[in-house]
View 1 (tube, rainbow, N blue to C red):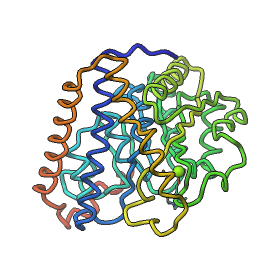
View 2: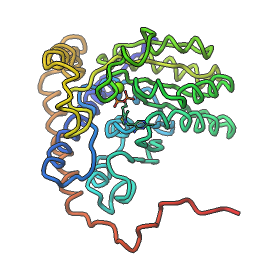
View 3: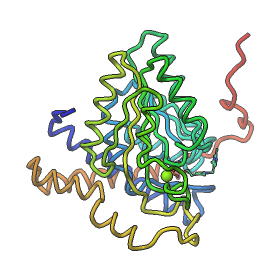
View 4: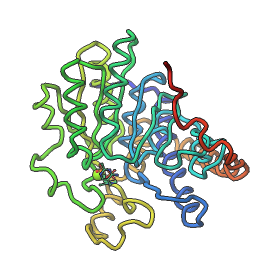
Length: 328
Ligand SMILES: Cc1ncc(C[n+]2csc(CCOP(=O)(O)OP(=O)(O)O)c2C)c(N)n1
Ligand SMILES: [Mg+2]
């Protein structure tokens, strides 16, 4: 589906991709210093599919992430201060410092949350889509999950449920080729995860995840179908993560070569590719892109200052906001 994007929308695509990249660059540094505790999964290399998908959604549409999900709320339009404060476990974080890197949720942009349980977001997204349908809202629900998650039982149950109820859901598999150190060739015999859509009676689409516009067009078509009451779509974005599975996790496993990583970085980087198109096809001036870049750098630096200046949560409130109140 061809989408006519305005110059402002194209600029916004670039802005959101580099917001993710610089935000995560900063997070990696903070993790190295020991200021961010616990594990940190980054999406360097995957910014194209994240932003292409999120920008096909409305602000009030739902989005569910996974363990590698700093980029998803940023792609959906979240402000950086609350996200960075959450990574640094501060009271001003989007989950008041009690969630951390793997549990960002920002309801103000429809980001329903993330969990570290691989595959668990798929039924949650189906549930959000069911809720929208039952309430007569024309919202859609998009779930990001990895190629590893596509091998979990929750994938089958969540997608089949959404299919039989014709729910307004989009299931977006971020196929980055690996689940930690296990290549997709060892976990699935089908060539494409999207081929499995046929088993649920829904459309399956494969898209180049390094091409932000191609992803945007594929997801826009799925959103249109979903809003029209025609049910879910399974989209597989072929992509790649540049860094280790998580910070300090997996470097010694030697499951992929430096050459492989370098070839994706040098010839398929979603930001560099889109920047080239902005200059050649969309007639941006280099100075316009530089201005976006400089503003994002400032915004990321501001989020770090804000987070560091914020207090930690009061230990007396350890249980506040953790459980939903029981309604009799
Ligand atoms: C149910 C479950 N099984 C195993 C794990 C351990 N684990 C964490 S991330 C991960 C790999 C997930 O791979 P994929 O879904 O491809 O996402 P990616 O990390 O590549 O983005 C695994 C196995 C887990 N957190 N939850
Ligand atoms: Mg993966």
